[in-house]
Length: 170
Image (cartoon, rainbow, N blue to C red; front, side, top):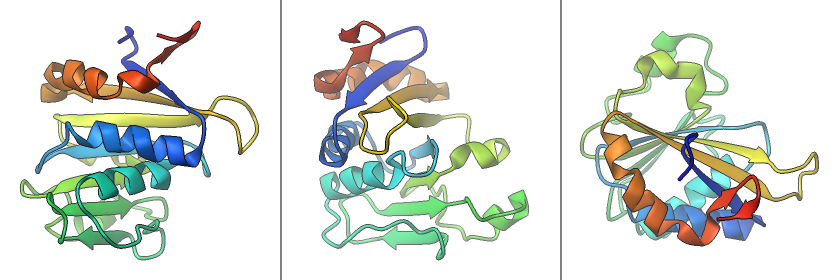
């Protein structure tokens, strides 16, 4: 773990899903995960890995136009939110009570756009391309806020296979 937080490197979409599945071992109902990164960085791939790991059996796609997709059949009920198209914070509040509910895991794509509404206890994950090509490796920077700072060691252990620093694999 670096001073910046936990940094991971994945080499493909499948690898990003695998890293997310490993991270999912540390997630629980009530958690909020905020994903950021440019278009095509792998936010939805990350959610797919988490979803599979918690028992979602159906296809997971971006909720860009629906805004919210619920997966109630998982071991931990999952709410997948995409706030990219929302113009006002009030629009997020209008999405429904299941978003950021204590009995669900909420993963929000473009979460930085609604920072004022995010809970103090949250996991933020920035996903970026390692190079300027869409098929490049991904760098995932994970930062815990609030109670999540105490859980970063567990997250680091779960994701050790993908640990990375500026010099390479840790």
